[in-house]
Image 1 (tube, rainbow, N blue to C red):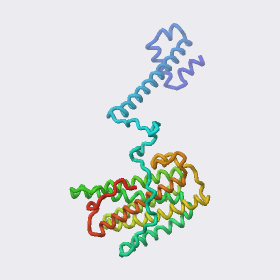
Image 2: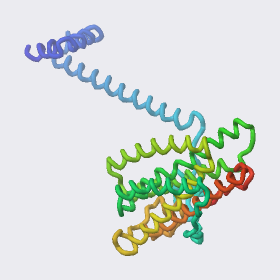
Image 3: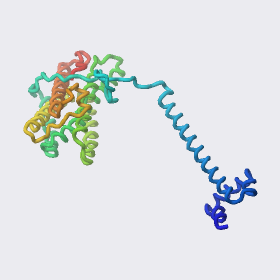
Image 4: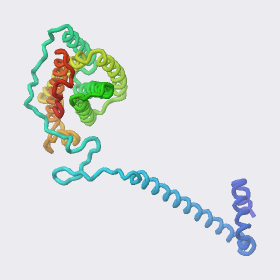
Length: 318
């Protein structure tokens, strides 16, 4: 009787409905087999119901997955490295990788002569002061912050040239692609630095603040004066070359450990399998030198009264 009372009252109302269902559908259970058979039958029904429900849920999930992966017929083809191993990256493909040109002159400098040049040069020097104070010689963290800023100008310039091309119904001379390539290259620098330096919470917060201020400021500047915007970026890249040179000095002196290069850097720059941090910083510095040349060249074109589309765009120039 105690067991019966628990079954009838123990879920208060739920079990009463279950017993009612059993008695209506299977009266022989209640009348012929007694309480023990009723309990066994009740458990069996619950077990079957739970199993059916789980099976139905699994079928729905499989159907959902099938729709996501196959409905539009979109799938990435199998991509392999030269040695036949599977390509592990979705953020860039093998045909987007390259070997950096290390023969570029790292000491080239645009001497500021006009008021615009001097303004751009002084602006960059002023922007460097808080960076030096905050990061000092922590060049890994400095590089990470630098790349979050350096990846903005190419995207802003490419976006505005894209809109201009649509608005004026004219070609851009390839400069949209060239600037977007620069932005993507700088972003890959950042992805590499994130592998090397795990940013702390306050550094991530600083990235948000700096990007918000810099993006909007540079956007307005590029709308008002593209030639000044490119000149500032050219000087920013010169500062980047200096920072990476100091980074390499600390690696050579032993102040920073020359750890193995991240896998993403090895594949992106086609580095040897045994490449180290020094190799990574060397190719990143060479990239910054190429970006320096591109932006000073873009500014020179516009200073001469021409538009960017009048000059050959340095597509693929890293």
